[in-house]
Length: 349
Ligand SMILES: [Mn+2]
Image (tube, rainbow, N blue to C red; front, side, top):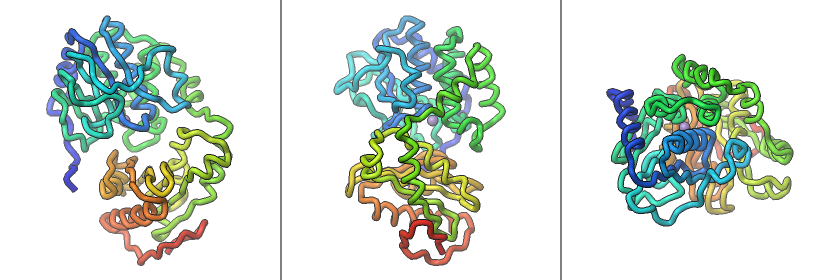
């Protein structure tokens, strides 16, 4: 694997101050983008940064297409359409993703300066100014540091998206990245007067069509590799049957991860039938979702990662089983050879 886990910044506070100065003193337009399939951290970190920069009188454009369940965070007119070319003398802020093909919304070429703020340890730092801090649980936590460095006064409009990003990436403070630091940062955000209970409640709302889809996906759960893996599939046909849109299934993989004995959980999502399958992976106990996804050409964090396989579901399933088997063996689990069974409810080998 060419991608290795990088350490954090030598002097993180100084790097954050540098980014704050670069943004605050930029005379031209600032375009803010994040990653494909934006989640709460992608939207929360970019929205908070845009609002903070707007309050300083900057000319900003935020280009992101949030999933429906997060759209309540966005005010009318705050988001812009994807750009085919960047405006002249523009600073491009790339958040929660490396400067590369997973960054979406605007071309990377043609930026006068690229500032990259990200907490993924695999980030190769291709920005003109890259601040990468894997010890931060969310990019939104880094944006909180950035807003503090900018000296912008905290308001509910800044705190709400920041906390949303933190809640998303820590699984509401249940994932292994839940540190005293991130809890402290969340406490400061809540101290702005933000209604924490209302926000966490609102973030769990799903359209009613979510529940029949959940039922269909749960019907596909299998436990191969000696029961160490939980694997489920979501097809376009299931979506069509229940009339469900594209964006509400992000937590399905988190549900099957709670099956007893499971070290790895995988959801295979059919994106384009026969051609493209999205893989979401979660893990526990030192087994690395990231290592599994790097083998599949994707990336992410140790406990939560993803990849896109340009093949049909059955092929993707085989590749995922092979990658999961390798990772489990690397971590010292003994596995019998697993036949490519697709029996629903199988206990595996
Ligand atoms: Mn993130």
